[in-house]
Picture 1 (cartoon, rainbow, N blue to C red):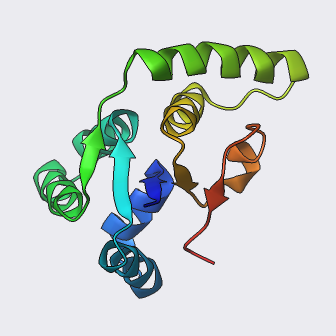
Picture 2 (tube, rainbow, N blue to C red; picture 1 turned 90 degrees about the horizontal axis):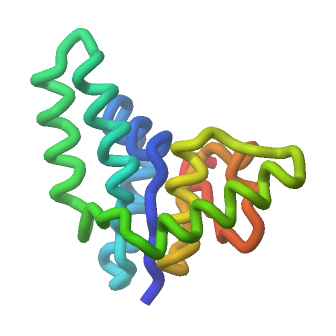
Length: 137
C-alpha cells in the first residue's frame, strides 16, 4: 500500500473550490486501497486559516467533512522532529531553505515514506528524497 500525505495547499484547494479532478483522483486512490492522510501540521494550518476567515464556523465544518474522507490525521512525532532538524540543516547549508511549516510537513512525509501530494513543487522539490505528486495538473 502507498501512503499519500496531502499538503495544505491541496487540502485548501479541495475544501474551498472542490475541483472534480482532485476529488476523483483522491477517491480513486481510496478505492485502490491507498492510504490518504494529512499531517497534524497541515491540520493546524487548515484550522488557523478557518479561524482567521470571514466565516470560521462554515470553514471548520468543511475541514471536518474533508478530514472524514481521509484515513487519518497523523500526529507529528519524535521521528518527524529528528527528520526536521536534519532536513532544515541540509536546506540551510545548501542555501535553499523552504518555509518552516513546509519543512515540518516534508520531514513528516519522509519519516513515513509517504508520497507528498502538493501543488507547491517549487518548495518541496528542494527536499532530497521526497516523492511528490500533483493531482491538480
